[in-house]
Structures are given as structure tokens and as C-alpha cells.
Image (cartoon, rainbow, N blue to C red; front, top):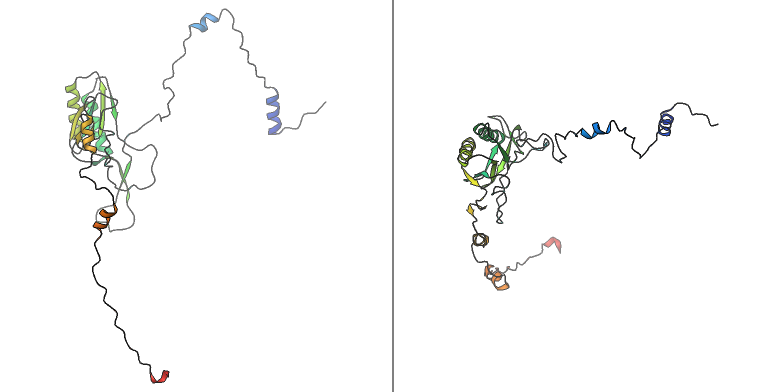
Length: 258
């Protein structure tokens, strides 16, 4: 008979796995317990599976950014993009009207609180279309130039013109939602307009109501010339300046060199 090996972590694991028995058959249930098990309903999970994090904050990025972002400018859709100018999830929205700008997280929070305070006690759902993920760094007043970019001050968001910031959906009268968005627009910098889901998208500052307007906006403002060798040669200035001739100079050798 083979003797047992002395106690070691590996030997302990071997003994544990040796006594392990896997069976695919279910344990029998007595007839008295079956009605009680059938009456028990499973408790639903309070949170279904999702790939997003449980705690989301739209006033700060998902993970702390260590790099110092540049001031930058909002992206200008020069190719005719209309993304982000229409209401997607809600029934009504708040759209930036006058000019692109950088909005701080504190201003966005004030606008959200104004909407929630006006609609307190009502059933609705508020959607936010932007995220304050740009870090703003400042240095103290009367500070000499140099010595780095400065320390972190607050989070901000770059918002281009005609972008939707808030969307709202619920069984609320339109005039009440207009009043709530008006209060939110007063808390935010710039001018805003109230839009609904039926409003057309915006390309730049022009509203695209039909395909004819869209094709007209995508058309170049001036006729581009057909590329050819003659057109290219006509734009190159001709070199008419004459190069002056180089005068010949006579050199007489020195007496010591002969």
C-alpha cells in the first residue's frame, strides 16, 4: 500500500481533488416540498447586466485624466455634418443658437438643477448629450510667464454651434417644458432655442428642411476650375528678369610667385 506523502500545500490540494465528486444528476425532491418550491418566485435583479459603470457622472470624465489638455476650439463641421443637432431620445430639447463656446461643469450643473427644480414632482426623464471631459488649468494672478501650464481648476465641455445639450421626455405639457428650458438657458452662457423632435437638423446655422436645401448647402460657393496644365502655367509668374553678365577680372601674378 502506497503511503501518504507528508503534509505540503500540493499534497493538501491532491487530497481535496481526490475526494471531489461531480455529478450531473439532480437531487430528488420529496412530493411534500414540490408545491412550496413552485410557489416561490425568483427575486428580480435590481440592476440588469450592462457594460457601463454603475455610477456615471456627466460632469467629469470616466477616468481621471493625467495629461493637461489644451484650450482648443470646438470642432466646426466643414464637411456638412449635422450630427448632434436633432432630438434623438426625448421629445424636446435645448439647442445652442449663437456661437460655439466652452461651458464649465458648474454651469451645466446649474442648468440641470434649474430643470429638475421646475419639474419637481412630475414624471419625466432628462437626457444629457454632452460631457465635461476637458480639463481647465490656471495659474495665479500676477504670475510670471513660464514654470508650466498651471494647476487643475475645473472640468469643461466644448460645445459647437447648433448642438443639443438637454433632452427631455415625459407626460408634461409643452409650455411647462419650455419654461424649464428657459430657466436652464438663463443659467448657461449664450443663447439657446427650444426644439422638438419634428424640427429639421441644422447644418452650420441653416436649417435643412428638405433634400434640396441640403444639396444646395453642400454645393461649393464658387466654381472650381478644371485642373489642366495651361491653367497651372497661367498662374505661375513668368521670370522676365535678365541675369547680368559676370565681368571678367584680370589677375596679375606677384613677383615672388614667379
